[in-house]
Structure formats: structure tokens, C-alpha cells
Image (cartoon, rainbow over all chains, first blue to last red; front, side, top):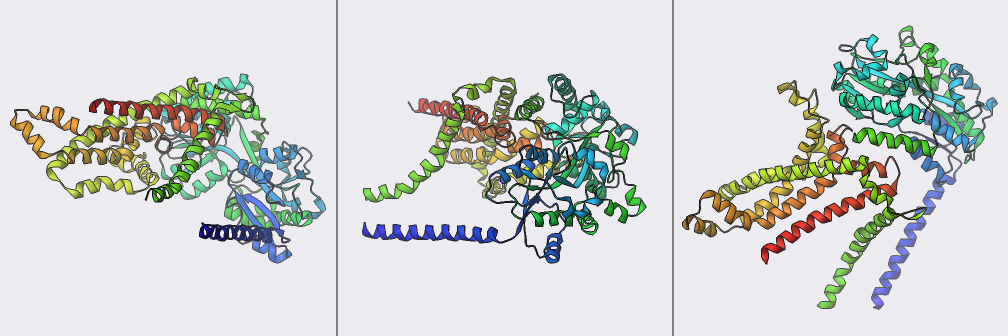
Length: 355
Length: 260
């Protein structure tokens, strides 16, 4: 019995020591004067953070996340005080609405002048006074198609996704909001309309379309299109651009009925402890040479006019990469949805998937 | 000695309580209450069309899966009695040592419209269908049917069968009246080992169904991950557990009756 208690004490001490080291290490890591940056995974060119540290002398702790929802969970847990965050439009809007975002001092971000003002009205849908956010990458949702099989004319209307001719060759996004875009727009409704009047006919359209689908996919859609397993995909322009690099036959079109424009922006959350440095970081991201490095790596549409000016005519005229104004004009930004609305959409999705 | 074995049981008790009983209690508690107090609505939600349909599809696919696995395993077990080839049984076991996800991914590449199958049958496209899902399940679960059935058949004494022949039984009678009853335990455990995972499966339908095949497992997985409704997910899990317990119970009873 005595021996047992000795061992218990040893064990307890070991556990305590381990815990202590753990806490200490964590404290050491984050108590330093570093700038804590939170961004999507693989959403920055390698080396950019090092360049920022070198030029400004501000140490950076760079963290990544997968989905806007997981970012929200990470941020709300308050276990780490983030200084700068980049995320998608509706999530930025949610945090602004909740009063979790600090207004930016524009004199600290002179390179903001490079950001194309054409996106201002879109940013205004989640940041009404344009006081809180700076666009990083933007893009549209459209149709990626195999130009050997499908003509550009056909792909310029969402109707093609209901064409019996392409049975078994269509990929839809495995997400309710994205898959609703074609159905809502064909019925002339806004992509943000969650009324029964808009959703019921949209669900009917999607149910009609389900038997024609090859699959509902999210990340895999790009690879399936590159391999040629399907000829049409509802997809984000960023993935479409990547797929078009791999397979020459692929082309991208934003249908005339209209679609979604998404904007990923930088903002400074309330938890920020180094606001001036955080603004310096956002400014750095807007500097054309840095924005070019990031654009070259991520290969999504950059709102940075400095980058656009650096490109040759061929690259500038790539409409999948730089959507012309008439395309932008028919696009809307996703609005922040309430919990009830999210629940409604998810019920609808379940009905479609089990039908 | 007795005290020794009592002490030796502690780790297992901790295991059982910590990793089996407590999680089940958690599921149970999530299933029958929410912020408004006790409720049965999550358990009864199985009656909604959007849940009932996936449940029936799961039961149907699990049933077919069991039948096909038995049809393949029993003749194989009888052949192996004669041939007694270790290498054959080894080869049938081999897929079990490979990660399920990887082998199902291989099926996906095989069945894709531009996959290997399309070179031989260009007009056939079965990827992302219920059929492809069933095929993947059978492939995945077949070894779990073969092992117990093979063991049971291999254990049948050759003298008993010779006896049956001597007494004038024909082939069919030897199989039905002698071999099948003697291998009953193996067949029953094969049924359970195939039926239960097939019923609760969601990975195979996810990968080979292209998001178009919703089994009850997929619905539960969606509730816990994307939809974040743990109460509903737990309620449906509880119903599924009842189906699993019911099926093992029925087969258990069956076995007992045999001995009485």
C-alpha cells in the first residue's frame, strides 16, 4: 500500500510537470510581441510573411483555418488573441454586425489605393460604410465546361444544367447555398431570398435536375473536370482557373441570369492588441509586388489594380480571371443569414438529397 | 489468485466505463433532452420522410449485402474444405489489411466515366449510383463473412459427412441437413458482422454515391458535422442502435432455440 502511494505521488508530480510545461510553452509562444494573423489554409504566397517580418521587424505568428465556420469557432473561443483575420464576405459581415471588428485608420493603409473601387459597392453589402474591411481576393460562381462538348453559348445560361442532353455529366456544388444560385436566378429571384415563395419553386427545379447530375461534390469537382469525368460543373471561379491551367479544353462562364460574387477581406478584430502593426500588415498585403506574389500563388481574382497593370494584355483579357464589368453587374454578394434561415435552407437540402 | 484477477480487471472496467458506457449515456441524454427540457421529438423524427427514406434504404442495402456475402462465402467455404488452400484464404483476407478509404477510392477510380471499366464497357456508367454503393459495401465487408463461415465449415468433422453419405443422403441433403446446421454459429456471426456495419455505413455511400445516395449514416453524420444539430443526430443514432440491437437479439434467440 505504501509503495502504491509513492507511485501515485510520482505520477501526480509528472502530470503536474507536464501541465506546467504545456502552459508555460503556450504562454511563451503568444505573450511575445508577435502579430497573430489568421487566414484560410494555403492562401498566401510562401515567403511573404518572412518578408514582412524582415522589412518591419514585427514578428508574425501565422495561423490557418479551413472554413469560415471553424474560423468563427476559433475566434469566439478567445484562447488566442488574433490581430488580423481574413475571411469570406458573409462571415466578415456577421462579425461586423456583432460589433467584433475595429474600424481601420486609412492613413495607416496608404496602399489601399490599389484596390479596385469597382468592388466597393459589393463590399458595402457586408461593410456598409466601408470602414472595416479591405478586399484580398474576389471571385464569382459560374459554370466550368468542356468546350469540346459544350458551346460557350449554351454555358451562358443556367438552363444548361437542366438539359437532358447532358444527363450524367453535370457536377453540382455539395452546398445548399451554392446549388440554389442557378435555381433562384432562373426563377428571377435574388440569391439571398429565403422566402417560401422563392425557395419552393427553387427546390422543385433542383429536384428535376437531380437525376441529370453526375454528383454533388465540393473539393473534388475540380479534379473530376480535369480528368474529364464530367462536362459541366457549378464551381467557384478560383477553382475554375486552376482547372483551366491543367486541362486546355475547359472554359468558364458566368451565366447571364446572374450569380454570386464573393469577397475575402482582411479586417482587424476586437481582440487585436497591436492595431498599428495589424494595419501595417494589411497595407503590406495591398502593396502591388506583394499582391502579385500572392496572386501568382493563390491564382484567384485579385482586386489589386497594381497587379493588373503588371500583366500583359493576354492575361488582362482573361475573363475568368478578371471578370468584366457586365459580369460583375449581374452578380450579388451573399448576405448574412439568421439561424432560422440557415435551418430552413438545410431542411430543404435534406429534402433534395433524400428525394 | 482471485484478488489478482480482480485487480487485472480494473483497466478493462475503466475502458468499458470511459469509452463505452459514458459515450452511450451522452448520446442518450442528447437524444431525449434539449434546452426546453425532456422531449421525444428527436427520437420520433425518424418518422419524418427525410429520415425514414434513408433508414429504409440502409436496411435494404444491408439486407442485400448480407445475402450476396452469404452466397459468395458458403460455396467458397465448402470448396476450401476440399482444397484446403491457405493461399486462397489469405488472398481473400488481404483486402481487410488495407485501409477501407483507400480501397473504396480505388473503386471510385475504377468505375469513373474515364476509368478502367470505361475501356471495356464504354456505355456503362455506374459510379455515383446506389448500385456502386452496394458494390463497395460488399467488397468492404466480404472478408467479415468469409472468416467465420470458413472457420465453421472447416471445423465440421469429415466422418460426420461420410456417415451421411453411407446412410444414403444425397448432395443436397448433406448440405442442408448436415453441414448447414453444424456451421450455423459461423453463419449467424457472419450475418451480424456484415449486417451491422452495412446498416450504419456512411463512408462508402459518401465516396461512391456522389452525394446522391443518402443512407441513415450519412444523415446522422451531416447532423453532427455540417448542421451542428447534435440532438437530432443523437436521436437518430439511438434509433439506429435499437435496430442494431434488435437484429443481433433476433439472431441470438435463434441460436438459443437451436440448442434447446
